[in-house]
Length: 123
Image (cartoon, rainbow, N blue to C red; front, side, top):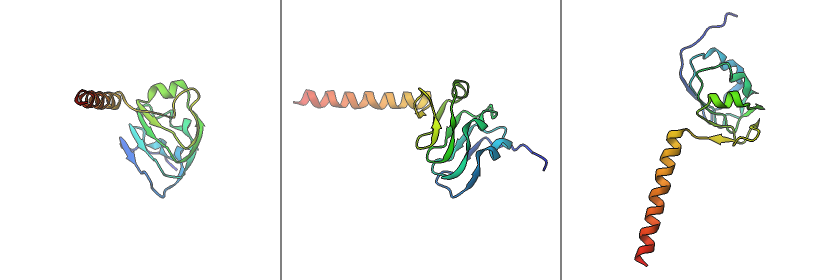
């Protein structure tokens, strides 16, 4: 079979009933975002995705994917979630959100703290 590349930048199949090896996605050479959360029938080794150099967001939580995340692959990813899998993240957290998400969360936390302070002033 001749291998062909597809120009797809985002793939989201969460909670799907798809099955197969994650290595079948390697033809998606322009893939930037991959969401497979809850696709229990998807298996294979996470390191198979390393060759997708434009990949920056990966959510494979609750899948049958396994392997070990290394520092080089992790540095490529802006955000990832590998929770509830057989993926070994070493000393790294099982999920990491993007800097934008961190800033949004930080702003929400500040607003909550300000709300708490206002309630304290009323007492």
